[in-house]
Length: 203
Image (tube, rainbow, N blue to C red):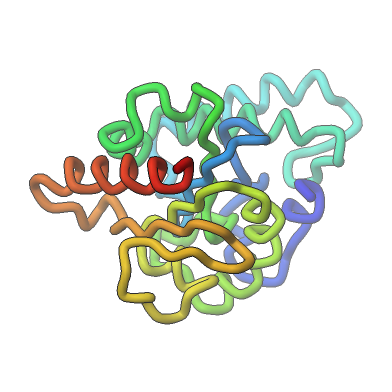
């Protein structure tokens, strides 16, 4: 799946990401957070890419952008580091807890796999083309947290009008605003929402 994602050239977005921005956190995590698209390539991204290239030197039989199925852990190392020190990660710490990504219960992915030029909003074409990869990650979880309207729209074109719903295929789905749209006090509201959703799912 990593290899197919890395080789995908259906959208122009492929030109802005040389390796798949796929998923980080525990592979078998019960809860999955789905955001809209990878953030803009800031200083942390350059440092992460340098680290990735150092690791990649130990794998002489492949090149960046052409990962084999045995290299999924290598891609995870890159994305885990890249997202782990990003602004988005720090904002989500406020509602999921400081160690949510490392604790084994959560995984994190994006609705689209490629960075968009200047961190622009992903096109409907990108969202549709990437739905296959999102579905590969999404099914079998206990709770799906959709962060933002774009992430939600891959599976729910219109907002259900509730903070969470039980979908017959996806299970419990919780809807959270994208962190860039949070207002003062929203992190506390969403933290309570997450606690209520998890409590309800385990009841």
